Image (cartoon, rainbow, N blue to C red):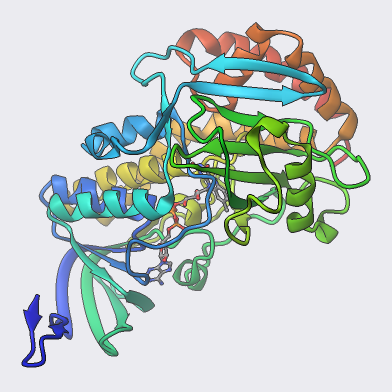
Length: 428
Ligand SMILES: Cc1cc2nc3c(=O)[nH]c(=O)nc-3n(C[C@H](O)[C@H](O)[C@H](O)COP(=O)(O)OP(=O)(O)OC[C@H]3O[C@@H](n4cnc5c(N)ncnc54)[C@H](O)[C@@H]3O)c2cc1C
């Protein structure tokens, strides 16, 4: 970076006009993965991110083996040496506790990590840049226009107070849950489908190096009513734990839910060995929406694709979205690579086929599960039955984390068929 005569750093100039193969909007997991895979395939990709990394992002900070697989494939795992490695899930409900190891699944590691998004997202974005992607931080995409052959994107650089016009063959929308450009292109959540809401805070804890993440399946409000969702404690290994709750919108009284007071109630219900209280809370909790179950429409336009949360790709079973951001970014990059090399925009349809192949039947079942969760009786039966058997709970963990091997599919079908029988009795 250049320095002026007073010793201050000069920001490099941004070109007012620039041309690339693909412009990616957003530098979170889905955008960084798209940019990484496109740049690795030799395409000319520019990613614009409105914030300057490292930046806070509200999240549980939990990476499952599915996310780790993607990080290994992008060559990022070595940089995670300081992140907290964990080996499974300790789950509690109705006074019972079960400790489950991550199951052995071909092609997946048997561990996960807990790492703040402050650290993780910067690592993954830097990795995309190293692979050859151009990254403009502090730059917001504010408007897009399409012609038959190109897309023109207006990009505002906040620190320089300049505007650039980028011409690209294709656009990828990776803006996250609140996707402004996506909305302007009619990318909308299907309002018939449920969504999630989650809140988390950081706490200091003597068990920050615990080798298991923990979930509480029978969370309750102040009046003791059972809620559809779960509470979590994810140890960060540095003296802190990430504590949160996630809920689904199928519950009665959804609109009146106060997530901050539910989080406080949950904290009071956690085992005392974690040392969680108002006093050990390190920052104000923050929350956000979880667009889930492939709930968005228009994920493909003539010259654009939508990835990650902007497309509603969070797994409805467990609220996990990082893996699906990485994976959908990779699928989008593969589709665009082909479309560019064949000079055929119609090939963008392949993205929808790939999404359907990877997630279609799983997310259909997951949406049914969400509907079941809205019924207190079913919720009680499912959770308490599972807690009686480690074998059943391990199968459920595999299903909920989308870690099923071919052999498990039969078992999953049996469970889900029983679930759908129960669902037929539930209105809505
Ligand atoms: C409370 C909570 C807990 C969660 N816990 C977990 C968890 O433990 N594990 C897990 O896997 N998932 C979790 N999730 C879900 C996870 O955070 C998301 O699924 C994931 O961040 C999606 O990645 P993304 O890249 O699609 O979007 P984001 O991570 O939201 O990234 C979008 C990026 O785009 C940028 N951007 C937006 N608009 C523009 C624009 N116009 N121009 C330029 N830049 C723009 C934003 O600044 C942002 O950096 C949680 C979510 C919440 C709310």
